[in-house]
Image 1 (cartoon, rainbow over the protein chains, first blue to last red):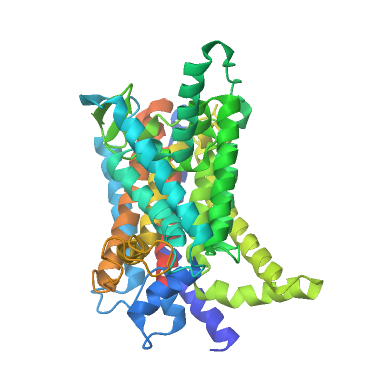
Image 2 (cartoon, chains in turn red, cyan):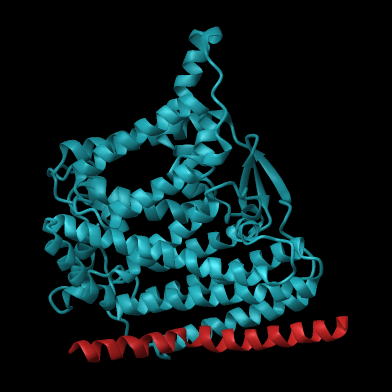
Amino acid sequence: MTVFAHAGHVAVDLAIYLGPVVVIGLGLWIADRRERRRDRRASE
Amino acid sequence: MRRLLTATGAGLAGAALAPAAASAHGIGQRADLPIPQWLFGWAAAVVLIVSFVGLALLWQTPRLQAVRLRGGVRIPAVVDVVCGAIGVAVFGIVVYAGLAGSQTATANVAPTFVFVHFWVGLVVASVLLGDVFRLFNPWRAIARAVGWLVGRLAPSSTPEPLPYPERLGRWPAVATLLGFGWLELAYQSRDDPSTLAILGLAYALIQLAGMSFYGVEPWTRRADGFGVYFNLFSRLSPWERRDGVLYLRTPLSGVTSLSPVPGTVALLCAIIGITTFDGFSQGSIWQNLAPDVEQRFLDIGFSLRAAVELTYTLGLAGGVAFVSGVFWLGVTGMHTVGRGRSTRELARQFAHTLVPIGFAYAVAHYFSLLVFQGQATGYLISDPLGQGSDLFGTANTQIDYSAISANGIWYVQVGALVAGHVAGLILAHDRALAIYDDVREATRSQYWMLMVMIGFTSLGLWLLSATNA
């Protein structure tokens, strides 16, 4: 396997295994922002 | 140990499998899994999210912060004496075998005992049965026996032990475990029986010196690396021994009483980091990267052996730093929810949540080693020195590589990872309820710990897939 093919293989592997972290992290970040905004509005 | 593992794997794989596959902890090839391996990562993440939502909705008051004990059976003091004597005898046999026996790693009992029975088997035993190492701890047994003898012979001349320095906390244990991790992963004579025997003796002498200065129990609780290591995992067990009485306690409640003394966070990050690098070092990324790094060291002028050891030392440090970074990221995120708590305080408050993860990583990574190489006990017990004896008539037994299939191992590994991280989430949620002002704030703070848990689960599965693919 060439270096590029190997690097590509590893990159795809990392992407699919880290997928849950990225997707759920994004979801939680959005949820957190919404809650903070709601808290800010409630305190104004 | 790698020679040990290679031998284990090679027995199963025979000539049909590539050496790379055979050398991994996971032995053999998985076949016909119902879904692709990476999909297990997504499924595990779903389980964690469902657990998180379930906890947020159904678990709204702290339930694990106080240990509730039930039952109670008094253990006679003679049990400690007998178990201690057994521990000293086993330690003596292993050291003697290492020094006087065959220097072939697979033929001598010392490497298998140290890396399989001691390092892995005792972790599982601690979770199932409680703090068994404390009972059999040979240096603790010797120190207690000497203390008892001196107390009898010269009761007035026994000086009081020095107070154990609070600032030292669990740092001596961190040093011990990092040292053992280095021995296991970087040191090139790691499975040399005589080296292991000498290191074992040196470690025992250091422990005896420490106990004589600071007292047996304070030293065992904080500074004896292996005592601390196995005690951590025993906190996951449903058994607790207090004042000579054995009680049953609520599952996981033993972990919450872990005192966050200095070095505790580092200790847990080191435990997980060592296992992480062990898995990573068997994957293709490291196998491709390591020779380049080794070449750099060779170019500077280091010998081949030193270059390999330095490369693996760097990798080990990277593994521990990576795990510490992920945990610190979660804690820093938590710090943004509800003011008034420093990241350092939060890290200490939530350090105990890493205990089940450390256990999950250990099971996931070493399960196949325990199942297969553990069977070597059969012939090693009859021929501990590897010199052709047959003490119990079992010297010709062989390892049964069909005891569990590669798929079976994979399911155990995935199950352990998911269960360990769900346990971590439960512990973190319960602690958050105890320290945050209201349930909503506590739940929000745990978004970050959920990410840490999913991150560690995905990392664990990726390491396993990269190792065993």
